[in-house]
Image (cartoon, rainbow, N blue to C red; front, side, top):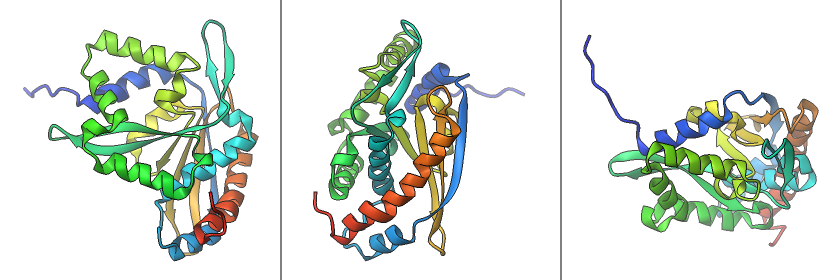
Length: 246
């Protein structure tokens, strides 16, 4: 049967390139059903009602402030070692349309633990609503995706393997929803990747953290999820109620 060839989209080129660097990285996933009744109630009563993505990005960055392992990356060059960052940079995927096709690009927020929920939410809104040419991360991704394959992959390899540069382009951790299946093959591109599902009627939510097993072990991943639940129902819920001003 004769078919036809179809080129990869720009965002698919970048996804395939990144996958080349992380194939074979040992990974492990911790899953936990968290009781988020307090933060869910606070969010429902909040006039701003920030996105769940915003809430998880800030809360997980606060957890990483307490657990240094979550701010470390494994680097193999010039010899195997860990690189620890003083603060987290959150990475998540935003969807836009470019030249008539969907374009998924990595958007980063430096040190979200130091920002208010309102500020994080504002940055996401601007990245989704501003013209693409005014969104630095999207403009950069389009430029790189259009480069010849050898040059594109070399630049990505360089950014991924230089400790000081990696978080600028990939973040120190990623946050996604369970429905973002397009990232399922990229779990090890980050030291940790947090994903969350839908809030159930009883106030619980399925939350998972996939880890690079060279950096994070199972007990550390479990401890991170338990602490995440405490921070969500504590400081984050307080901020939503207006009890914390940043």
